[in-house]
Length: 227
Image 1 (cartoon, rainbow, N blue to C red):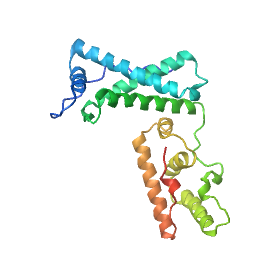
Image 2: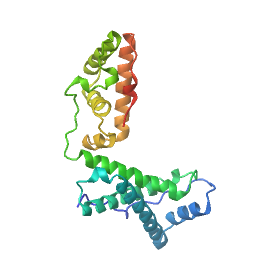
Image 3: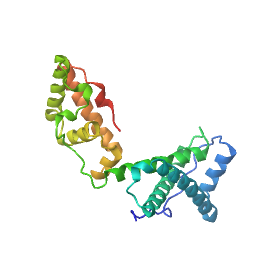
Image 4: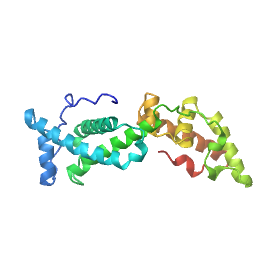
């Protein structure tokens, strides 16, 4: 089996925010999840079952990426995704604004958790490339093709990545922008958070952009893309 499922018993009920108009079903969900005792326990279990159906749906949709996973592990993966999504929903009850039904809003948490776990499984046992083995890993729209201007830009990008960035910024930029490592996978491997990696990536892009602009060059669109 895979890792132990997260415990739901320690999750605290979110505090009630200001008055907001919700559809009756959504209001009933919020009230029951903010209740106490057996009423809340029943509501949490109902929520978990909803999220489990969503997790199973998403894992089934991605079954081609999970061909090597045994059925018991697939079942456990769905349980993990549902549990983690349930924890997230309960922690973000005050963020629900009623733009959609509560069940639709909550369903998305399970889809996200399932997709994240599939990406992590795909990289399990694989080394995270933090340095480019070959600078030709830079996407094709920046590869020299007889165009002197394009070749100059490519060389400038190579030099700037090597000389202007800190080792950590370089590692994060190369992993995310050049080697297509999912950001949640990189966050797990580096024992950090997605937010911290986004900040590092933003700072690295800003440094490169400023350096290239000082040379009269424009940073191309590939660096703006992060998975």
